[in-house]
Amino acid sequence: MSGKLIVFEGVEGCGKTTQIQLCCEWLQSLGLAVVVTREPGGTILGTELRRLLLEKSADKPVAEVTELLLYAADRAQHVAQELQPNLAAGKYILCDRYTDSTVAYQGYGRGLSMSLIDQLNHIATGGLTSDLTIWLDVDVEIGLQRKRGSVDSLDRIEQETIAFHHRVSRGYADLAAANPSRIVRIDGSLSKETVHHFIQKSLRLHFQDLGSQDEV
Image (cartoon, rainbow, N blue to C red; front, side, top):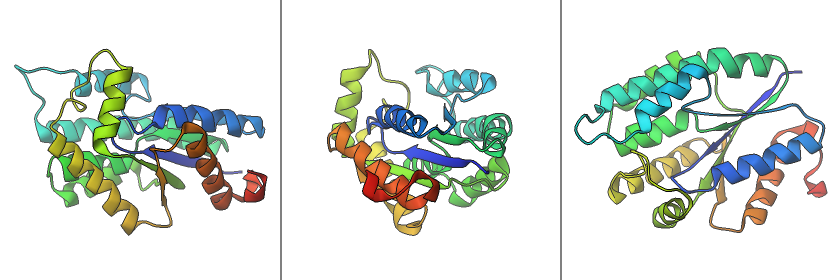
């Protein structure tokens, strides 16, 4: 049996962490082997790259192209070390961010070349795409407000301008419109229980071995 790669995407504070945990518990209750991972930081190398990418440094800012290349390096290691082996072992992988984040943040947010991003994503993934991407759509201001209330300090990306985050949000909307069979939009402003219900329903619709949606 081949595994499944399920990616969770969205702007800051959209609720990915909570929903990934709920989804993991549900899938495990069905007797499935589940792996939870993230980008950046899903490997030992990635953990160090995550620190470099997210630490705030006013006097030595990370150049935009450098940022893009570091994300690509993290992804290449992640695919080779974690994603491919676990998929081959038939596991369900719940991944916090993947290629769509790079398009939304570095493409729409930073304004970097989409053709360059597509090329780097293809190199880093070897063509591996998600079986399903859950886009938790929340208003940018609501998401950032949630984030400020849940952490002691915001990281380098979270501290970007509100205009940057709005561009990222528009990127996700465009991606979902262009990839309706792969990306499912779920209203992330609903209660966590309701959001989880819709995620279960979406996964049952996409993966036959999870049973009928009538069971949700």
